[in-house]
Length: 442
Ligand SMILES: Cc1ncc(COP(=O)(O)O)c(C=O)c1O
Image 1 (cartoon, rainbow, N blue to C red):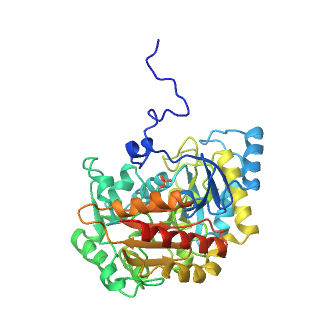
Image 2 (cartoon, rainbow, N blue to C red):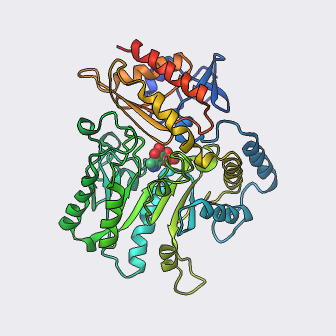
């Protein structure tokens, strides 16, 4: 007899949960058993308002019939097709549809299965592109403090979150980091882009001087850093990064895993901020979070440099068993249809003034030391409990959940990013609940 425990719905031991306080969770599990539009249903039957679009991914709201039907139909028609040396129509159709909404010039798409894989793919494209052009000494990658680029080795190397890096050895070599742009002392309670900190982009110039441009392949940043607590780019910052990269022949990668697909009120942050990178990584909202899928956009200049040599040879030795998977492609196509039919790729632009007003009305609530916003993203930074960082925000998260609201916290920052279908009444409800919660936490 195997000594493996037979799982029951009440046995939580086997599943080692991701980015979760496992022991705390398993003593008092928060189980979601259903979802529709703006709400989850908890296992005790309560309706939970989704203040985070799941994990920044369910942009069109939950269980949208068009998407679920497309998945079911595809699963019965063509469940899987080999991704290498074979094709199926929906992956090509999807790539074309994505190019249509992407910033001008982003003409080619590589498919992945997650944000982390999109980042690895982008970094590899950047390194290989320089080499394909005979510039193989460009091997350094530059990220940023407090950057989050997923959890694979490339992503944690260019990322700048200490807890995600320190347990895992030496990571990739030849990586350097720019300073982050969070300057609460100068920018607290800014609405939209902060006034101060745009000059921090010149730190890239210092790094280029240190290593020499001829050794640097790419710079990767989130246009808006999400996972470290919503750091909005100061005025002029992204433009200056672009200018420095162009001047030194360095590729600029925007990690738009969070900002992609309408979060800011334009399809991509590159359009919203009017700064054109060379590569864009996406995932999450691509399929409305329903099926794992990511997409990496590259310019023709990048793509075309690989299309040389004998035509029977593979041009880029990279890809995944599930790149452009038929069911994921069908889900993404139905998601794009839904976004288009309901104007969701730009709806955040209409809603954001109301969102901003309600969010900033929490100024003056207990513990609140900063509030910031862009598009349909908001952050409320709390004064940490002395000697116990993260405790206060986590307690707010638990209390909000008890009161029917899902929020997300990182450190002592509450991050909000509801589905793009949220109504004004639901925005009111979200902030009324939070106002109450803030008076309840110690
Ligand atoms: C900017 C950014 N890049 C990459 C990732 C990783 O995505 P995934 O969890 O799908 O691997 C995330 C996830 O939150 C992200 O916010």
